[in-house]
Image (cartoon, rainbow, N blue to C red; front, side, top):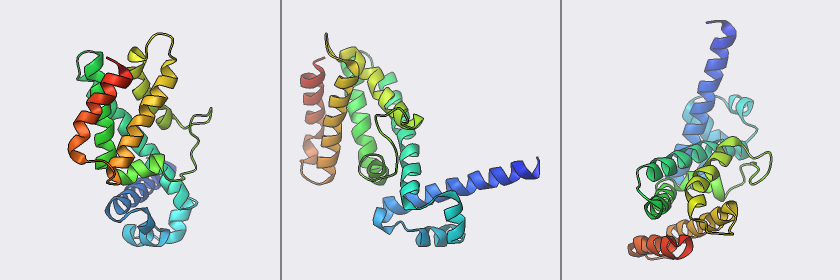
Amino acid sequence: MSVKERKERERAERERLIVATARELAEQQGWDAVTTRRLAERIEYSQPVLYSHFRGKREIIGAVALEGAAELAAAVRAATAAADGPRERVAALARAYLDFAARNPAVYDALFQLDGGLAYAQEDTPEPLKGAFAALLECLAEVAGDGVHPGMFTEVFWAALHGLATLTRAGRLLPEDAEPRVELLVDRLAMV
């Protein structure tokens, strides 16, 4: 391995460490606790080293969001692949999405609440974000209905899931009604 290849590998490893540490800290204490000073202390590198990878917290949030988008897409695809029939696939998608949001609140915030400097629903949207939407679309397109644009249906279904995830996390919805809500969403919105 050349010196250049070794340095590139070390740089990539440092970047992964920064993102993993930021994510861990955010999941434990919230995004307000994620500062370059605290990250530098935790990973045992200087702040200038962090700034050589990310210009600041906003870019770190963006990196966590991209990682989370890929994980969300994988979770949705795994859940829907294991389900038989359109209704079961849509219900599996909803459960996988809501479970991801509940298990990864800081990542979910990085994806959908915080400014990570990422473009959404535009030509320059990063591939992991497009992939997460595609994972939803792959399942929901088959139940969009006649005359309904599959992408728009997916946006509306996603908005409903996001609302459920956000309101549940904020304690605005009773947790024991989570499954009946999924059933209602599948039966009434997806009508399968």
